[in-house]
Amino acid sequence: MDVYEAVASRRAVRSFTDRPVSRQVLERVMSTAAWAPSGSNLQPWKAYVLTGSPLKELKRRAGERLASGDDWDEPEYEQYPSVLKSPYAERRSAFGEQRYGALGVPREDLEARQRAASANWDCFGAPAALFCYIDRTLGQPQWSDVGMFLQSVMLLLRTEGLHSCAQMAWAKFHRTVAEIVSPPDDLMLFCGMSIGFEEPTTCDPRTGRAPLAETVTFIDCL
Image (cartoon, rainbow, N blue to C red):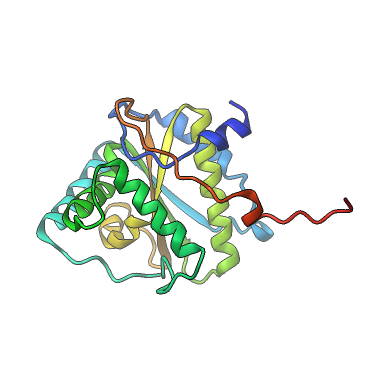
């Protein structure tokens, strides 16, 4: 699989089989992703990869919190601006319509939407998960480095025949994740990532992208 195919086939998959992902594959992906670019080579990411009983325990604890109606943890960063201006608000709305429309969940059925969203904390059934942290003292350029690292991970997973789903949702349960991975206090959870083999009987439609002219301007001599 070349890099074009990896990029074109990567999408957020939200239904995985329970087929295990080998430690060897995960180590190969993570060691190669370490070559992602980072300003002054700070390498500001710290990743924890969970499989087996530790991941099952995390899912169990998260499930208990959901069942008890426990409030989300106090946010440690703002996931989205309180007000999204155009065209970002429209893109987010279109994503929601596509996501829940594919599940047959109407906009007004908030309970069904919440049930669908709760699958985040089961990692959509995935047998492996990554939790990515960043040092609290670092700034926006280092956050962009973390994004490039995560993209590298996701593309490398595709070359291994695997799929993934990056999930900021796990930041809402950062205390529960910390109970399992025991990160140093100076680290902040940015996101989780479900990793595994796609469940072939379901289909997660790929979210569309804006026309090139909306996001890219070519300036040349023509």
